[in-house]
Image 1: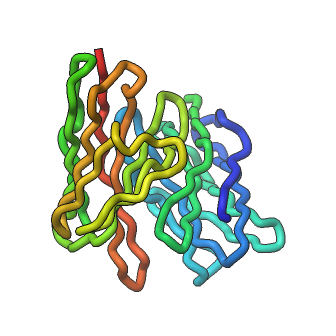
Image 2: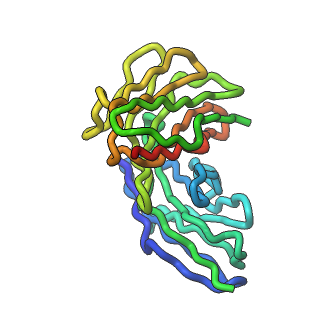
Image 3: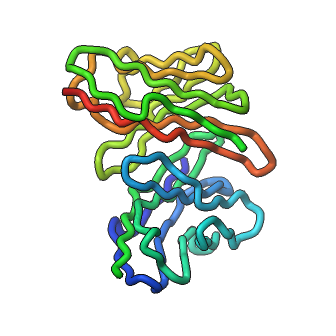
Length: 112
Length: 116
C-alpha cells in the first residue's frame, strides 16, 4: 500500500527565503508522486509530479522537488518565497488503480 | 489539456434535503472518476471510485446509500448527498484521469457544501 507523510503542518518563511516542505513516502512499488497547491476555497493545482523519469522535477511557479529513493523522500523546494506562495500544499501518491492518497497538508505562511 | 468542470462551486441546503454535484470531463473521456472529501483544515480523503456503466466502489466507512454516485456517460459523474445533515458539510472534489505519456490527472475546482 502507498502512503505519504508530510512533516510539519505549518511552515513560516520570510519573503525571499528558501521554502522547504517535506514529504516522505511509503510504497512497495516505484511510486508516482505529486505536489499540489490549494488556495482557500479552491480546488487543487498541480505543481509537479514524479513519474520515474528524472529524479529532479521542476514544476510551476519556481518550485521543484527531488525524488530520493534512499531516503524515501520527495521534498518540495523553492529558492525564494513570494507572498503569493502562501497556501496549503499537499503531497500525494497514486496507486495502481489511479486513486490518490494525500498527505495531511502543510500550510505555508510567507512573512513580509 | 484535460479539463474537469465541477458544478456547483457552492451550495447551501437544508437538513434532510438532497444535493447533486456534477463532475464533467470537458475535452476527454473518463471511464473512471474519483470523488474526494475534505473537511476544514484537513486533507483530502478518497470517498469512492466512479466507473462508467457500473457501480461505484466506495472506500471503507463511506455510506453508499448516502452518497449516491452515477457515472452514466464517459464525460459525467454525479455525486448525490441524500438526506443531508450538518456533518456532511464539507468540500467535495472530483478528479478524472487522462492517460497520456505525461500521466495527467485533473481535479475539479471543488464544491463547498453547507448543510443548515
